[in-house]
Image (cartoon, rainbow, N blue to C red):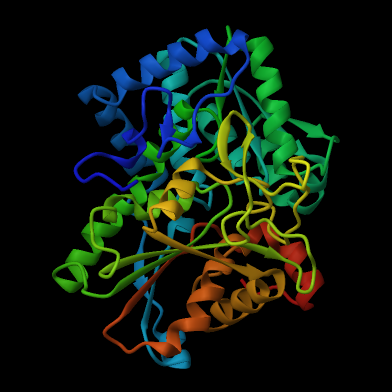
Length: 411
């Protein structure tokens, strides 16, 4: 099993939608086969349509705010010694996070499909916030499913969703977090697919939703490749790209344009949520060697018990608190193209505090996990090695959590 050159990774699946023969697929009820097939055919047509791509790029530039900044973290680099540390500040995008790319594309697709309603899931609230923004922008009615636990801990984003006119549907089943929100969202779509377009918030779910999200967030690495070449004249001989991994949308988008480089030159480092220190609970199926199972319509590595039941996860970060992970990341792990590790809640908080104190950016708790790994290993390298961290979300949504844990909030 290997990654084929000159073919986008989102297309490297077989006729049944599996990457590497065992990750992905479309495990869906009979009632959804026709809607999924229609969406698949529509997307395959639109992604090759020059007018649609022109429209996408117009909104990415003039509404989303592309390109987002690529900056050197001078103070952090000096503080740690070793590798140069840079950041792709995707949190500067409209709305404060990478989720805006996927939301924008889904709403454009919904318009082309003649749908008047969009429905989506959210954990950290960013996917819901961005979908509500895009729905308002394009004149669509919006409904967001969100775990009751996440509604309490991500109030700023919930307030934004309501302000944009979206209806938030609390989910009280299971762990009352992202996994349950995705489940309820999919159940709703089964009954309303004739009038409603579903936006899956990450590179998870049935094959077509993985592809749409990956195609959308790849804007991040398209920009980054240009910015790095402009800064260094070429792609550096030793470049390490750090990204948090929950469902996997920002990390895939951050890495996609560099997929054809040798991993000795461009290394992908994905950082999952290790959960509270000294706890057995985590949200790190790749790092903890979880077994393969089916979750939300796709085969993937899943946190599960000995009987194959999905286990509840725990993380200070609502956006990483997911029992599964994108089939694309499972494929990247098995092909050994990417390296995966995890950071604890405490390590993420410490990284947030250090970065926010030294630099002009204030990463949310999701990218703080990625910063934690970069901070940990930077002193092992010299200035010829370039670290780049995707600061894919802004900390404002986590201000209450951070203040309660650290006693202060650094903006």
